[in-house]
Length: 269
Image 1: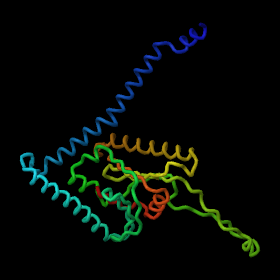
Image 2 (image 1 turned 180 degrees about the vertical axis):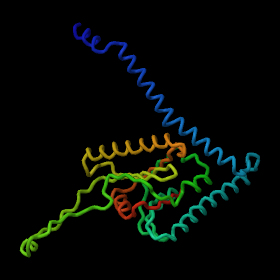
Image 3 (image 1 turned 135 degrees about the horizontal axis):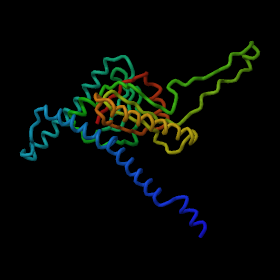
Image 4 (image 1 turned 180 degrees about the horizontal axis):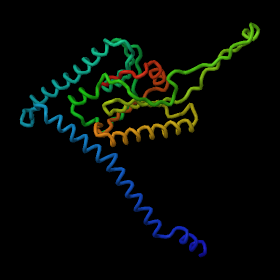
């Protein structure tokens, strides 16, 4: 009985109700700021763009003609990807091609494939998934230059070797110790408010759980800041389009370290 009274004194009903009300208010405000408001602003931008384009209403077309139009649109979509590939083949740096149709991540140099990795998992947020083909091809296919990145591994691993004092010590010197291998998680952001996330497909960790949690805390803080900056700036679109793929751990490591700083990325949807 005394314990129950002590519990009631320590946690009065009024405090519990106030806590629940504050929690509901914070949840509602977060939903409006990071969910509803960015979506409405982006829908307005897209609607204005679409209304400025002379689109045909094919609701009254026959099924055969509608099928033909869909095939033409699909061919145009693939042609846009080929034009993007051709455009980047004139560059002098390695680029990352993400082919979602064939589930491949490709390192490419001047149009030549240097390395390919099978994509085992793909996640696209609803905003990017529902964009019209022509809008996605023109703004979110590329080549897009990375303006910011975050990663759980070093871009350029450093091997430190102590210089020997004399020839005797040099002959006795052992091979340098390779840097510790960590799990591979990374993300690229672009000027068009798009984020591409690349995660290892393996669930078992070779690093520590502390390193794993540290990266995801850092990623959450980084992603949250991007949302806040998009809301503060009137020039920003406000909505972040997000694409996530999963690769084999060592493939993801090799791709990330082979890419130059601020690499170009091309996506085929």
